[in-house]
Length: 636
Image (tube, rainbow, N blue to C red):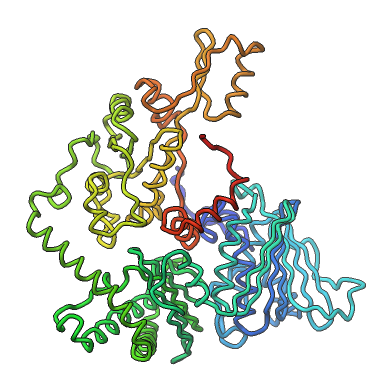
């Protein structure tokens, strides 16, 4: 480090150089998540046109050359001379940060892209970008190379008197920036479907030129249809869902909710189409109004409970699926990721709207109201019974006392950022893992058999399961609504099961448990899946491991021309490996391979878990038939 710190040490990054220097500041990272964020930025501009009433069709194309094209039929980016910059407004929008039409309330009353950095960031991080604007009967075009104009904005010859209007943005992500430049059709579909639900009547199409996959999303029912789609297979208690769409004090409030017979809560909040994963004032207002409205109705129905029972927030949210969407002109998001809405006035608006309309709904629909109330009261009584049971045996329970389970082989390090917990299938493999591990930072918890399927179990039954209680105690951060991520005892929780059908089932049960009861572990990226080898190939003193059939054939070729001289062992389970082999292949951080479980789309994850682990056999059969051809590893 130099001791000199003067004017020569101050760097001035011109134009979009700062974006290329620190892309994570603008799109969150350079992984697949950041790559798809480029598409979202362009699409969000088109959606803003739709919210302004100027666009009703958006077309996303994934092209065979690796580029993406987004076409809308909005008003088109302005192309006339900018009054202060001395060049086309189109070039200003594409090359200058914090330049756009979203900083006042004239061009866009409501917008998600208030930072004004969206499309210019896409331009900066693209190998090339081409934009065509159809406006006033003319077609204007400009091309850029890594954010730098390759020429002036020009009219496209032969395109005079065009009737088309709108903007076409085509870009190719820069391989110098991104770890991967391959777009995922499924990932984009999830976000586009969400946007279509949130903007009633807007048509969003997507075509993947690489394999001809395509989809069209358009929902006249808006978020009401969204809730029905999420609740499919969950035995709703009332039809149709409760819904409200009203503007009050400059805030448009859209809410749809429906209770089902399940035990999990799925409440998703949005502000100007942005998924606020950490909630905010709109979610707080909704929760407060929901609890108060149902309690008020309950008190009027004194015959139900004698007026003695009071519902908590947890009681009224069990089995609830809801979408809260607010649209306002000046949203205040907390942080660059816009994960939480901070506008204080929104809470009172949402609370008042939901309080008024939900009260009317309950009064006017006594059958639906009684079904909802019965569900909430049952939950409250179960909660009270569980509380009393815990009070009676509070010092006898390992879950309450904090005593670690006896079969847990804990590590000596207490720093959660350095430690790992292996959840191992079976006592035999658990014993081998205990011998193989590094005792300083690796803890081992053997699991006996298959844990409970929490998708179909009551909270009482879940906590009554020995293996579930053991996992909760070992992790040390609580459970369900009481889960505190700051108390997690391990930085990584690694699921290690056999490479067979039973192992896959146990893995799925564990993932279901973590998704439903400890979701923050997935959001924080703490859940991993171990990848033990499937084969040992030995020729003389040379031993090589292969993790699948394809790799086995590659390794056989490396060992020589005569496969008959190579001893091949197929591992049927973890217990067949000695501790040295298990350490070398599966547990040594230097040589092992582990898969990180991410939660990119909470809505789709909820739907899949419901289908695969819920009660609806027909939905599960349809899912298996749909995706049977895509299965690559099937143990029969």
